[in-house]
Image (cartoon, rainbow, N blue to C red; front, side, top):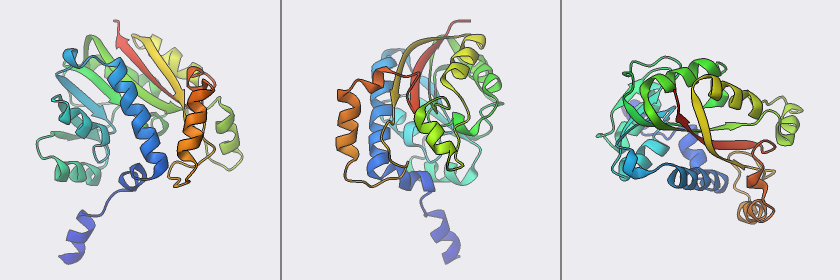
Length: 226
């Protein structure tokens, strides 16, 4: 019993990653982008696809948005419920959910696409559950970036290219309205390097975030047009 209890309270890998210097940098950029592109007055009901332990579900809930946390991993959803029992959770695949048509004002898919090979299915499903004109905010590792090519030399790969994501979004009935590149830092996802802040400052100063097609990571906002 003690072992089971201790295991239940153990943080997931991604919870621990979010507390690192690199994790805080990424979360700050992603959260700021959401705040700048999604009008809170137009969002009352949202779904966080790939919520994990609720990094963005909890953020949305604090903003008085009714949010559903969706993930395939049952333990991650238990961790989310431990933090906020009022957030409903659904164990399901982002490519096929039990959620109703034309229901949500926003869908968040932050750092999820690198685990979903089938972009067309994921985007079509998001389109199905969103209201017309509603928001989709997503981020992904850009396969066509220099950082991706360097990762490839170490046997690590991003699944999708910038052009591929743009193509499938359009075909799935979305119009991209804002985008930003980030994570140019030559550091790992869980780095505790003291240079994170300095490098992030240089990334901004040199305008690298304005080059999404070349950026290692991309975050974008799109609206359901059809």
